Amino acid sequence: MSPLFLMRLVLDFMAAGLLLVALAYWWLGNTSHELIGTGMFILLVSHNVFNRRWWGRLPKVARGRQSLVTIASNISIALAISALLVTSVMISRSVFAFLPVSGGPTAREIHILAAYWAFILAAVHLGLHWSMIMAVTGRLLRVGPPDAIRTAALRGVAGAIAVCGIRSMVIMGIGDRLIGRPSIDFWDFQESTIGFFLHHIVILGAGACAAHYMAVWLRWADGVMQRTEAGE
Image (tube, rainbow, N blue to C red; front, side, top):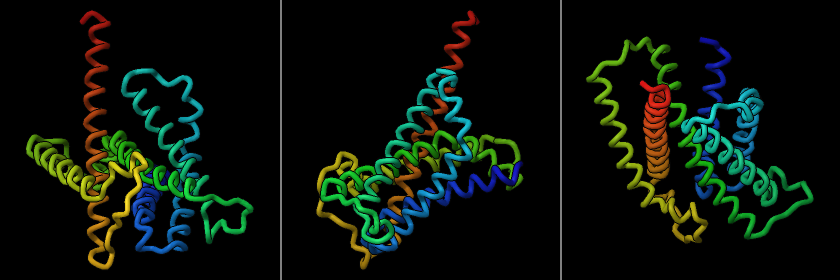
């Protein structure tokens, strides 16, 4: 396994972690929030530099259903991150305050909307690549070939994460944030800080699980279609 590939994987997880931490604005304070966001954008730029060949091959990518989902996911997260970056510069009070641009309440609302969509789309992106991540992890940990007991246990864990993730989405009001509905409910970090992150981690896990099993189903459906077209 290439050390460069492992480094890329670590940087990708670091970017996802920074996005998660950046959501805790009222815990971090504005300056820390902006610095963390800047670090995340730098990591995302490196991610796209490493994956520039994928973008170059985009017009020639096979148009199976799974490929179309991957393309839609990548383009969607790129748009969300772009909106996040533009509004970050517009509303910055620290890192980019020297720039002659400014944004009002609308830019701030778009920033929050883009942040939560980027978070959910990052979960989808993670889930669509979960098989590759598990394969890499298995090789690093020298895990043996799949067996029925381990597979059943992992599926049970995935189911539990999905249930907890749905519950956490309700608790954290993610639905309202994804449609830009104003809310005055903010997490009380004085009462619990770890609770905020645990809720968002299981939401991330639930989204990744849903995307992973959707990808598994799409691979199966594409295989059935190919066999049908081949007359098998």
